[in-house]
Image (cartoon, rainbow, N blue to C red; front, side, top):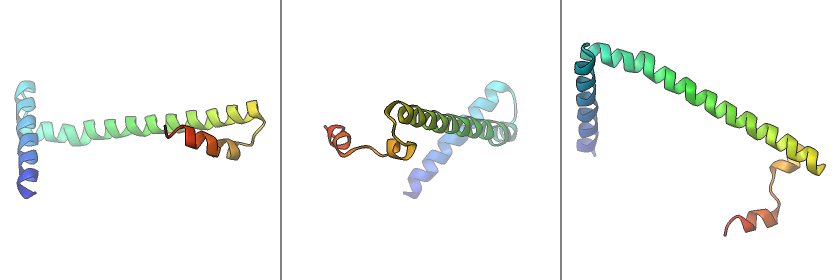
Length: 88
């Protein structure tokens, strides 16, 4: 298992070395850019995506509750026949 970890690490370092060569910057600059710019940017985008999905689900539950006259809590729990039919 340790050999696999070292192989993945070596592949990542090789990738960063190649990228830094293409961009004509040092390995340290490429590494810093990845950890201080790219990683937070991707994390922020994923957080916004998950928050947007949560908001969409919340609105969807409220809309379904209004249409069916069911409370949002009841709309959030599927009925047994829906649960059984979704297993097929």
